[in-house]
Length: 109
View 1 (cartoon, rainbow, N blue to C red):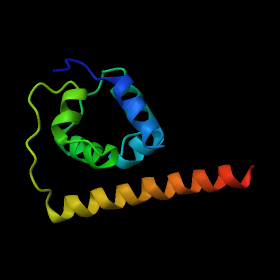
View 2: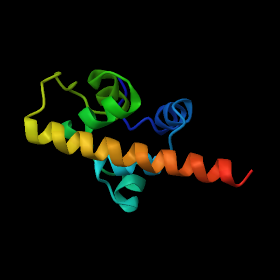
View 3: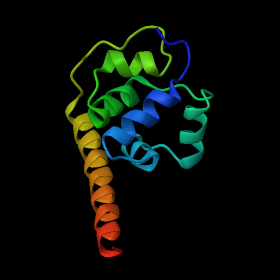
View 4: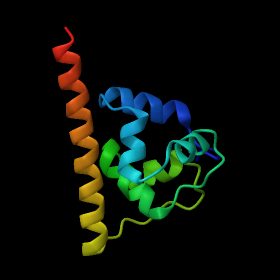
């Protein structure tokens, strides 16, 4: 079990999925400052954020909780309708931003 935020694992996972830290921040609703604190293991990740990161990074909530340094793994519980809508809206926004960055990269070639 990780006792700290595993920044290396998250960075590698983002790269493997062709995502950026900004995508992670958008999906969770973190400010750039909050994201920096999370990666420096100076901000705790909530259960809702574990669920969002689980969906974004295609990993189980238990894996995300472990990599976040949460000592008690988060039980997989269905999100409420409002939380599901919020999660999906953030996920769509992150995907739209990612597509826009890919399109910009293609246009610059």
